Image (cartoon, rainbow, N blue to C red; front, side, top):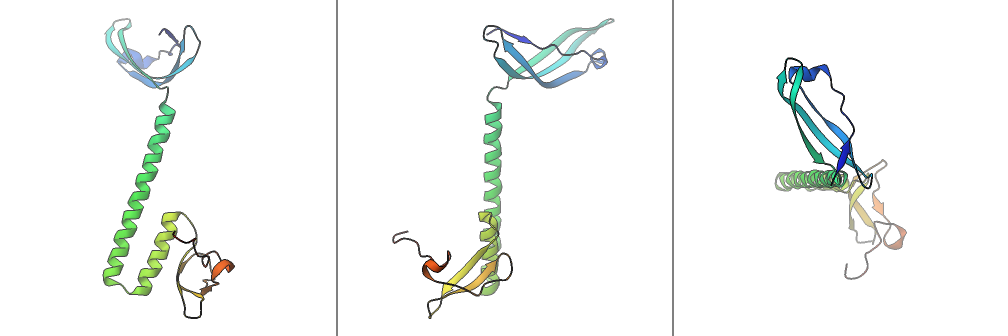
Length: 162
């Protein structure tokens, strides 16, 4: 494939053996398609009048945006897994040495943080059919009960078999 390149402006730093590294764009001679490139150019040899041997390394950056997005997703997933493992480790320590109320409060906080929500609760069905809130993390005031059934989202039972 033939390509043309936008010229790089030569600067005084070239005369002292400098290098240039940056993004530029080639153009396909036939189609005119822009080809994003990462170029590193450096001086290998000098004469009295300036650079006499210059080398360039060109890397085709087509697809680089998708690669970068994939890397960002992998980084976000890794960060989530690290937070998840830290939450499990913290909860495990509380389960061994803490009391139940402290453990439930920490579990509600960990659930909110891991799910990326501002409100999380742990509730237990009481003898009278209400859902008693055992732990809550979210805006005040903290609820003490949730209505059972279709009267509240926490009280809505999942379909059978789920």
